[in-house]
Length: 317
Image 1 (cartoon, rainbow, N blue to C red):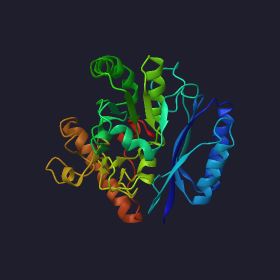
Image 2 (cartoon, helix red, strand yellow):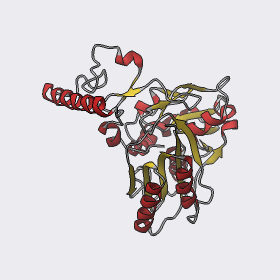
Image 3 (cartoon, rainbow, N blue to C red):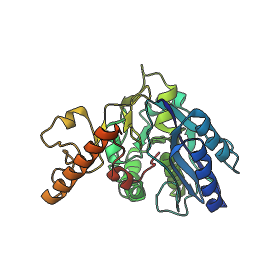
Image 4 (spheres, one colour):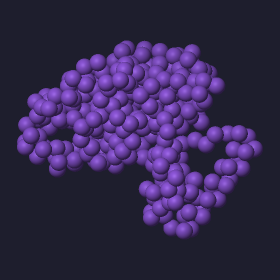
Protein backbone atom coordinates (compact mmCIF):
# COMPACT_ATOMS: atom_id res chain seq x y z
CA UNK A 1 0.00 0.00 0.00
CA UNK A 2 1.60 3.27 -1.14
CA UNK A 3 1.25 6.15 1.33
CA UNK A 4 1.99 9.85 1.21
CA UNK A 5 4.52 11.22 3.69
CA UNK A 6 4.38 14.89 4.72
CA UNK A 7 7.09 16.59 6.80
CA UNK A 8 6.26 20.10 7.97
CA UNK A 9 6.88 22.79 10.58
CA UNK A 10 5.94 26.38 11.21
CA UNK A 11 6.88 28.98 13.81
CA UNK A 12 3.88 30.99 15.00
CA UNK A 13 2.32 32.09 18.28
CA UNK A 14 -0.02 29.24 19.26
CA UNK A 15 -2.94 29.20 21.70
CA UNK A 16 -5.60 26.66 22.68
CA UNK A 17 -3.17 23.76 22.37
CA UNK A 18 -5.18 21.24 24.41
CA UNK A 19 -8.24 21.68 22.21
CA UNK A 20 -6.13 21.60 19.04
CA UNK A 21 -4.42 18.42 20.21
CA UNK A 22 -7.74 16.60 20.55
CA UNK A 23 -9.05 17.96 17.26
CA UNK A 24 -5.96 16.83 15.34
CA UNK A 25 -6.11 13.37 16.91
CA UNK A 26 -9.71 12.92 15.79
CA UNK A 27 -9.09 14.36 12.32
CA UNK A 28 -6.04 12.16 11.72
CA UNK A 29 -7.77 9.03 13.00
CA UNK A 30 -10.71 9.63 10.68
CA UNK A 31 -8.32 9.87 7.73
CA UNK A 32 -6.14 6.86 8.72
CA UNK A 33 -3.18 9.19 9.23
CA UNK A 34 -0.27 8.16 11.44
CA UNK A 35 2.92 9.85 12.58
CA UNK A 36 3.93 12.50 15.11
CA UNK A 37 2.79 16.09 15.51
CA UNK A 38 4.42 18.34 18.11
CA UNK A 39 2.57 21.44 19.34
CA UNK A 40 4.08 24.25 21.40
CA UNK A 41 3.58 27.92 22.04
CA UNK A 42 6.17 28.64 19.33
CA UNK A 43 4.54 26.57 16.56
CA UNK A 44 4.04 23.10 15.09
CA UNK A 45 6.42 20.39 13.85
CA UNK A 46 5.60 16.97 12.48
CA UNK A 47 5.82 14.14 10.03
CA UNK A 48 2.69 12.20 9.11
CA UNK A 49 1.77 9.58 6.54
CA UNK A 50 -1.35 8.02 5.12
CA UNK A 51 -3.82 8.38 2.24
CA UNK A 52 -3.36 11.73 0.43
CA UNK A 53 -6.88 12.84 1.33
CA UNK A 54 -6.33 12.26 5.03
CA UNK A 55 -2.92 13.92 5.02
CA UNK A 56 -4.38 16.85 3.11
CA UNK A 57 -7.14 17.40 5.68
CA UNK A 58 -4.64 17.53 8.55
CA UNK A 59 -2.47 20.02 6.67
CA UNK A 60 -5.51 22.13 5.76
CA UNK A 61 -6.51 22.36 9.44
CA UNK A 62 -3.02 23.48 10.43
CA UNK A 63 -2.95 26.07 7.63
CA UNK A 64 -6.18 27.53 9.00
CA UNK A 65 -4.37 28.54 12.21
CA UNK A 66 -3.16 32.13 12.64
CA UNK A 67 0.38 32.51 11.36
CA UNK A 68 0.45 29.13 9.57
CA UNK A 69 -1.36 30.06 6.35
CA UNK A 70 1.80 29.39 4.32
CA UNK A 71 2.76 26.19 6.15
CA UNK A 72 4.87 24.21 3.67
CA UNK A 73 4.97 20.43 3.62
CA UNK A 74 7.71 18.33 2.03
CA UNK A 75 5.85 15.49 0.32
CA UNK A 76 7.18 12.08 -0.65
CA UNK A 77 5.88 8.54 -1.09
CA UNK A 78 6.58 5.22 0.60
CA UNK A 79 5.57 1.70 -0.44
CA UNK A 80 4.12 0.95 3.00
CA UNK A 81 3.10 2.83 6.18
CA UNK A 82 6.12 4.48 7.80
CA UNK A 83 4.56 4.90 11.27
CA UNK A 84 2.75 2.44 13.51
CA UNK A 85 0.50 4.96 15.25
CA UNK A 86 -0.38 8.63 15.67
CA UNK A 87 1.07 10.83 18.42
CA UNK A 88 0.05 14.46 18.96
CA UNK A 89 2.18 15.86 21.78
CA UNK A 90 2.35 19.15 23.64
CA UNK A 91 5.92 20.39 24.14
CA UNK A 92 7.76 23.44 25.44
CA UNK A 93 9.57 23.74 22.10
CA UNK A 94 8.83 22.15 18.73
CA UNK A 95 12.56 21.60 18.36
CA UNK A 96 14.55 21.66 21.58
CA UNK A 97 17.38 24.17 21.83
CA UNK A 98 16.84 25.16 25.45
CA UNK A 99 16.97 28.92 24.73
CA UNK A 100 13.48 30.32 25.40
CA UNK A 101 14.42 33.84 24.30
CA UNK A 102 15.05 32.65 20.72
CA UNK A 103 11.90 33.38 18.70
CA UNK A 104 12.12 32.43 15.01
CA UNK A 105 8.60 33.76 14.41
CA UNK A 106 10.01 37.25 15.06
CA UNK A 107 13.59 37.10 13.75
CA UNK A 108 15.39 34.65 11.44
CA UNK A 109 18.15 34.67 8.89
CA UNK A 110 17.82 34.94 5.13
CA UNK A 111 15.86 32.14 3.43
CA UNK A 112 17.67 30.60 0.45
CA UNK A 113 15.45 28.64 -1.98
CA UNK A 114 16.84 25.29 -3.17
CA UNK A 115 17.55 26.54 -6.70
CA UNK A 116 20.01 29.15 -5.34
CA UNK A 117 21.56 27.01 -2.59
CA UNK A 118 24.44 25.48 -4.58
CA UNK A 119 25.58 28.87 -5.80
CA UNK A 120 25.77 30.14 -2.22
CA UNK A 121 27.57 27.19 -0.67
CA UNK A 122 30.09 26.85 -3.51
CA UNK A 123 31.33 30.38 -2.83
CA UNK A 124 34.66 30.06 -0.95
CA UNK A 125 33.63 33.00 1.25
CA UNK A 126 30.61 31.07 2.59
CA UNK A 127 30.89 29.00 5.77
CA UNK A 128 28.49 26.04 5.41
CA UNK A 129 27.20 24.39 8.59
CA UNK A 130 25.16 21.19 8.99
CA UNK A 131 22.97 21.76 12.06
CA UNK A 132 21.90 18.11 12.37
CA UNK A 133 23.20 15.47 14.76
CA UNK A 134 26.46 13.67 14.04
CA UNK A 135 24.79 10.33 13.24
CA UNK A 136 22.68 12.07 10.58
CA UNK A 137 25.66 13.88 9.05
CA UNK A 138 27.57 10.60 8.85
CA UNK A 139 25.30 9.15 6.16
CA UNK A 140 25.05 12.23 3.95
CA UNK A 141 25.61 15.98 3.76
CA UNK A 142 26.42 18.81 1.38
CA UNK A 143 29.91 18.78 -0.02
CA UNK A 144 32.27 20.85 2.15
CA UNK A 145 29.82 21.36 5.02
CA UNK A 146 31.09 21.69 8.58
CA UNK A 147 29.89 19.02 11.03
CA UNK A 148 29.55 20.38 14.59
CA UNK A 149 29.61 16.80 15.91
CA UNK A 150 26.64 17.35 18.22
CA UNK A 151 24.58 14.53 19.69
CA UNK A 152 21.48 16.72 20.03
CA UNK A 153 20.32 20.17 18.93
CA UNK A 154 20.47 21.31 22.55
CA UNK A 155 24.28 21.25 22.23
CA UNK A 156 24.29 23.74 19.35
CA UNK A 157 24.54 26.97 21.45
CA UNK A 158 27.58 25.61 23.32
CA UNK A 159 29.23 24.66 20.03
CA UNK A 160 28.58 28.15 18.70
CA UNK A 161 30.38 29.79 21.61
CA UNK A 162 33.25 27.32 21.85
CA UNK A 163 33.91 26.55 18.18
CA UNK A 164 31.98 28.71 15.74
CA UNK A 165 32.70 32.15 17.17
CA UNK A 166 36.51 31.66 17.08
CA UNK A 167 36.25 30.13 13.59
CA UNK A 168 34.27 33.09 12.25
CA UNK A 169 36.76 35.52 13.81
CA UNK A 170 39.57 33.66 12.05
CA UNK A 171 38.01 33.08 8.62
CA UNK A 172 35.74 36.16 8.41
CA UNK A 173 33.23 34.58 5.98
CA UNK A 174 30.93 36.82 3.98
CA UNK A 175 28.05 34.46 4.64
CA UNK A 176 27.09 31.66 7.00
CA UNK A 177 24.82 29.06 5.37
CA UNK A 178 23.05 26.48 7.55
CA UNK A 179 20.81 23.56 6.71
CA UNK A 180 18.99 20.59 8.26
CA UNK A 181 16.51 17.90 7.22
CA UNK A 182 13.32 19.93 6.82
CA UNK A 183 14.40 23.44 7.76
CA UNK A 184 13.29 23.74 11.38
CA UNK A 185 16.65 23.35 13.12
CA UNK A 186 18.56 25.59 10.74
CA UNK A 187 15.81 28.23 10.95
CA UNK A 188 15.99 28.26 14.74
CA UNK A 189 19.79 28.23 14.52
CA UNK A 190 19.76 31.39 12.38
CA UNK A 191 17.54 33.09 14.94
CA UNK A 192 20.02 32.15 17.66
CA UNK A 193 23.05 33.36 15.68
CA UNK A 194 21.39 36.68 14.93
CA UNK A 195 20.55 37.08 18.61
CA UNK A 196 24.22 36.45 19.38
CA UNK A 197 25.40 39.14 16.98
CA UNK A 198 26.45 37.08 13.93
CA UNK A 199 25.92 38.69 10.52
CA UNK A 200 25.26 37.32 7.03
CA UNK A 201 23.27 34.34 8.32
CA UNK A 202 21.37 32.22 5.75
CA UNK A 203 19.48 28.92 5.82
CA UNK A 204 18.15 26.46 3.26
CA UNK A 205 14.42 27.03 2.78
CA UNK A 206 12.56 23.75 3.19
CA UNK A 207 15.72 21.93 4.23
CA UNK A 208 17.42 19.00 2.57
CA UNK A 209 14.12 17.31 1.69
CA UNK A 210 12.95 20.30 -0.35
CA UNK A 211 16.35 20.54 -2.02
CA UNK A 212 16.26 16.85 -3.02
CA UNK A 213 12.74 17.33 -4.35
CA UNK A 214 13.57 20.33 -6.54
CA UNK A 215 17.26 20.10 -7.53
CA UNK A 216 18.28 17.53 -10.16
CA UNK A 217 20.66 14.88 -8.92
CA UNK A 218 23.11 15.53 -11.74
CA UNK A 219 25.31 18.42 -10.69
CA UNK A 220 23.90 18.51 -7.15
CA UNK A 221 26.13 19.35 -4.17
CA UNK A 222 24.43 16.70 -2.02
CA UNK A 223 26.44 13.58 -1.20
CA UNK A 224 25.04 10.37 0.29
CA UNK A 225 21.57 9.85 1.74
CA UNK A 226 19.36 11.87 4.07
CA UNK A 227 18.36 10.47 7.46
CA UNK A 228 14.62 10.67 8.17
CA UNK A 229 12.78 10.04 11.43
CA UNK A 230 10.51 7.22 10.29
CA UNK A 231 10.72 3.57 9.25
CA UNK A 232 12.42 4.41 5.96
CA UNK A 233 15.50 5.47 7.99
CA UNK A 234 16.99 7.30 4.98
CA UNK A 235 16.03 8.54 1.53
CA UNK A 236 18.15 8.97 -1.57
CA UNK A 237 18.27 11.96 -3.91
CA UNK A 238 15.06 10.76 -5.60
CA UNK A 239 13.34 10.66 -2.17
CA UNK A 240 13.09 6.88 -2.40
CA UNK A 241 13.77 4.69 0.67
CA UNK A 242 17.54 4.38 1.02
CA UNK A 243 19.99 1.62 1.91
CA UNK A 244 20.18 2.25 5.66
CA UNK A 245 18.43 0.40 8.48
CA UNK A 246 18.46 0.94 12.23
CA UNK A 247 20.28 -1.01 14.89
CA UNK A 248 17.43 -1.95 17.22
CA UNK A 249 19.83 -2.02 20.18
CA UNK A 250 21.14 1.56 19.97
CA UNK A 251 18.92 3.13 17.30
CA UNK A 252 21.75 4.35 15.04
CA UNK A 253 21.66 3.98 11.23
CA UNK A 254 23.59 1.15 9.58
CA UNK A 255 24.80 0.79 6.00
CA UNK A 256 25.01 -2.59 4.23
CA UNK A 257 28.75 -2.57 5.02
CA UNK A 258 27.98 -2.02 8.72
CA UNK A 259 25.58 -4.96 8.69
CA UNK A 260 28.26 -7.18 7.17
CA UNK A 261 30.66 -6.65 10.10
CA UNK A 262 31.13 -9.33 12.81
CA UNK A 263 29.92 -6.79 15.40
CA UNK A 264 26.44 -6.78 13.85
CA UNK A 265 23.76 -9.06 15.27
CA UNK A 266 20.28 -8.03 14.22
CA UNK A 267 18.51 -6.37 17.12
CA UNK A 268 21.42 -7.09 19.47
CA UNK A 269 24.55 -5.12 18.56
CA UNK A 270 26.41 -3.16 15.87
CA UNK A 271 29.72 -1.36 15.44
CA UNK A 272 28.30 1.69 17.26
CA UNK A 273 27.18 -0.13 20.41
CA UNK A 274 29.15 -3.38 20.65
CA UNK A 275 31.09 -1.95 23.62
CA UNK A 276 28.20 -0.01 25.18
CA UNK A 277 26.06 -2.81 26.56
CA UNK A 278 26.65 -5.68 28.96
CA UNK A 279 26.19 -9.35 28.14
CA UNK A 280 22.95 -9.29 30.13
CA UNK A 281 21.73 -6.37 28.00
CA UNK A 282 22.55 -8.21 24.79
CA UNK A 283 20.72 -11.33 25.96
CA UNK A 284 17.69 -9.18 26.70
CA UNK A 285 17.95 -7.61 23.25
CA UNK A 286 18.28 -11.08 21.69
CA UNK A 287 15.10 -12.26 23.40
CA UNK A 288 13.28 -9.14 22.22
CA UNK A 289 14.51 -9.82 18.68
CA UNK A 290 13.25 -13.42 18.85
CA UNK A 291 9.83 -12.19 19.96
CA UNK A 292 9.72 -9.64 17.14
CA UNK A 293 10.69 -12.29 14.60
CA UNK A 294 7.95 -14.62 15.85
CA UNK A 295 5.40 -11.81 15.63
CA UNK A 296 6.58 -10.87 12.16
CA UNK A 297 6.36 -14.47 10.99
CA UNK A 298 2.85 -14.90 12.39
CA UNK A 299 1.40 -11.65 11.09
CA UNK A 300 3.91 -10.49 8.45
CA UNK A 301 4.26 -7.20 10.35
CA UNK A 302 7.37 -5.18 9.40
CA UNK A 303 9.50 -3.92 12.25
CA UNK A 304 9.31 -0.25 13.10
CA UNK A 305 11.55 2.46 14.44
CA UNK A 306 13.58 1.44 17.47
CA UNK A 307 13.13 2.94 20.94
CA UNK A 308 16.63 4.36 20.59
CA UNK A 309 15.58 6.54 17.67
CA UNK A 310 12.61 7.92 19.61
CA UNK A 311 14.84 8.66 22.61
CA UNK A 312 17.13 10.72 20.38
CA UNK A 313 14.40 13.20 19.62
CA UNK A 314 11.65 11.88 17.32
CA UNK A 315 10.89 14.55 14.78
CA UNK A 316 14.14 16.27 14.03
CA UNK A 317 13.41 18.05 10.85
